[in-house]
Image (cartoon, rainbow, N blue to C red):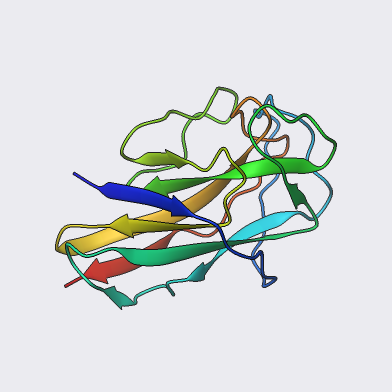
Length: 144
């Protein structure tokens, strides 16, 4: 079981793109918006069974908590060991889909030993992916 603890942090800029999908039914996203995982890096070894920090980045879009409907904003969802959910429905909330609905741009997670994937997906005020969806590259980390 994953132990998830949310903490506050700063949004930092970097690069990664979002794909254009007509299936998304959420609020419109700004042209060129993208999300990225600033830490850890793809392929990095992280401590197993101990909390470690994951911080999120977002470009050309703002962060707003769940329930706040404001143009060109949304909030992060950290996907752990799973693929993107259906992009025309509310993002699930379970151990594989961490909702950062208070507008967090960083969280602390704990993973069991082994290989794991992490990916960000932005959700609108109602946890629905934007149109087009804004998500990060999926990265792999090794917990040891």
